[in-house]
Image (cartoon, rainbow, N blue to C red):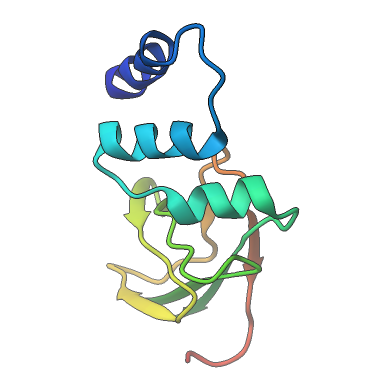
Length: 124
């Protein structure tokens, strides 16, 4: 989107002809976006683990969380529920949301570099 494009252009103009550290670029992105991406950078730049979006469906209740991620990882994610995209904010703790109707499955937007795993045991 336009904000992200502006951040990328800003990195070029701010750090032009300089040697910079990853920390400088991360701080710049956090400051310009107004979002703290520290845990996202930590997950994707310092580990080889792919975070797993775990979920459970129990009738019209969806339970979800992140596993295989650095402590504090809280990347928001878009999932398809029925015919609509919904933004969720998983953490390492189980969270639940009531759905309008029972769902057969949950699909994570393919633009996220995450794995998806459906848990089959009872709701947490």
